[in-house]
Image (cartoon, rainbow over all chains, first blue to last red; front, side):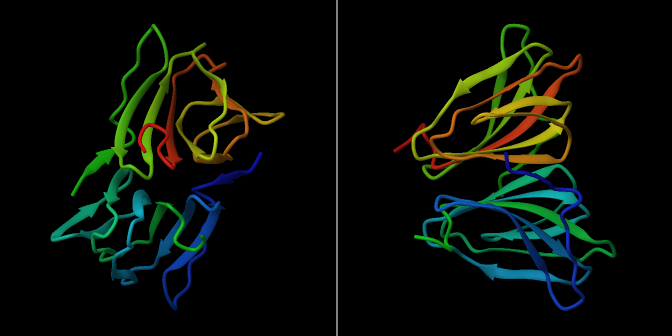
Length: 108
Length: 108
């Protein structure tokens, strides 16, 4: 059984946002994204692939389509396929996100 | 922006495990599963679809393939496509799970 932990499997870098892969199949992936204050995942879109962000720790400023919102722990949001999305840590504390994406754009 | 909350959007029933859908597309779904003590999702398998369980609250006894493990908050586990899996709340407290599945077996 492949068991991971969303609170302890984190890795930060002063250079840029870090991605820690938890699970990956040809159909989806689950990652932890770790953002120091000021770091971001720039706005982008995925053709035909949906992404879900769950805030594990901290507060993130999310852009999805034309909408911008600050989300905190336990909030979960959908970035639908083909819709531009991004997240920036505008807070003074670290930001940790669980990210789920399907299908997996890295395979197939 | 479609925002939900994994801690507050729960619904229990004395009858059986409750599923609360958070997001659904043709490519995946995200649900909250809510299990009172003694309730379960019986072992089953999905052809060509992967499932991920994240424990939000409580302790669940997971069966995946031939493996059986008790998992608690922040632990996350993969039930790969075509592998038999199930979960039972053997504890005296409520169990809340976040469940991702891809592709969505309810569509397409």
